[in-house]
View 1 (cartoon, rainbow, N blue to C red):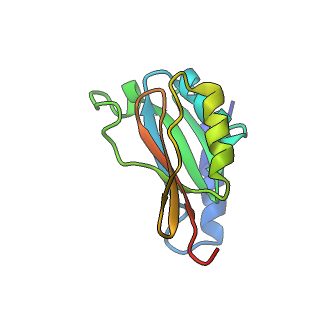
View 2 (tube, one colour):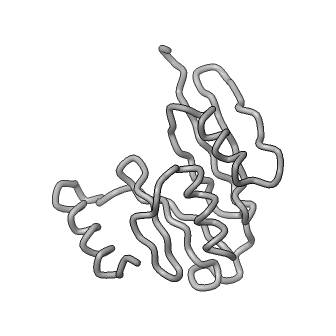
Length: 138
């Protein structure tokens, strides 16, 4: 398990080579951190870099994608009512296949629009997470 001190050191290291912003991050709240960690671990195909009792984070494209305890960090929030994480990915078909291994409902189709492909998934707490791949010039 990663300690809060390790998290602080990680953020300091990011600051050493950055401008006023250390790194981009996004988080979703969860009523069941174990269930959400299983879901996102399958989607991202990696282990979290931080794992605390109420906070789990993955390194994604130089930023942090975190799952936090709804009870501790966003008590009273309505599941799925927060900002929508929007994550660029090269292979949406692979992410869709991974989602099928952990979702109990049918996995949505990939949406193709001019210049972009989108995969919109709901995590176990009904939080919408969108993955996109730009197709302009390809």
